[in-house]
Length: 215
Image 1 (cartoon, rainbow, N blue to C red):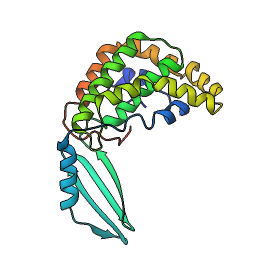
Image 2 (cartoon, rainbow, N blue to C red):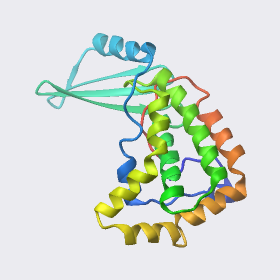
Image 3 (cartoon, rainbow, N blue to C red):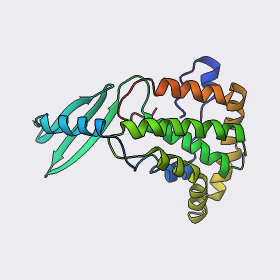
């Protein structure tokens, strides 16, 4: 689902539809790169100073980063697993990024050729990339995010061909709830203003850029 903060008919009109092949290819597109020190230092400081507690025989701990991003960790056999949750009320930055990149890939893979929507998406992705470079817990750069977004369509098409999913791909592109229809609805709402307003709201609170929750 595309996390639009709209209501009524506009919310229903901009629902996005999953394309399994593209989603799988894009799963890694919102990670990697080089980030600023502040969020990472905050994470390391709180991680080092938060004591472990034993719950049902498992070591756990929880702490809160700036902007109401919750970090939950478990340690089993010396191996630490980490989960993060954005409770800022603005949405998880990296989930929105992944959704935008999915739309960008669909525009190419489905041969929609919507230049206006593509331009608006790239602008939004670049802004999110700048935010992520400042705020990600894991290292990442705006340049890397933009570069990966630009190549997403080609990667998705290659994956679909390799996995013999072209028939499924075409159905998701052209069906009654496919990406073609989704882009039509976006154009009706005015993509430039729509994505700008979304990103303005998304990035209005400085906080670590995390993936979840993905609504």
